[in-house]
Amino acid sequence: MQFRSASFQTLAIVLLAVPSVFADMHYAATCIGVRQGGTYEILANATECACTAYLNRNTGDKQYDTCPDCTFDGMQCNSADWHIGGDEWNYYCEDKCGARGSVAN
Image (cartoon, rainbow, N blue to C red; front, side, top):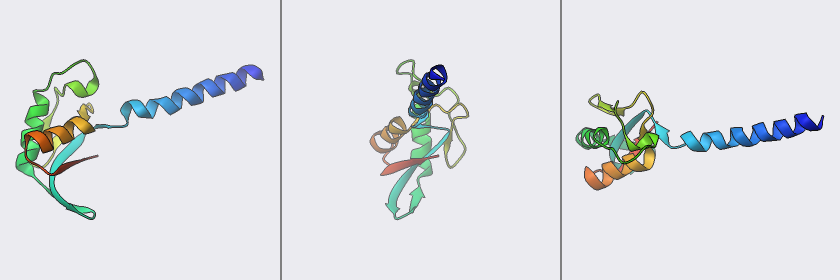
């Protein structure tokens, strides 16, 4: 019985750690203007700008450091392989492309 208890505790610790690895990775994201309550304006030009910048990004070997599959569909940036990092995306939207913020799935 001791073995099962230790194994369960180890499994629980591993499962608790997994969400933090993927917690801020996204497959779709947009740049936005002013947010009022739960509504906001999607800024297509800023989103395209940020998506292109993220597509060209190559800053390391973590999943969010590159986005070889980033594509702009006219409204949002998509990455089927979940390469869009939330903080990185927000940086491109706000600091490089003139948006007030960002949203992602």
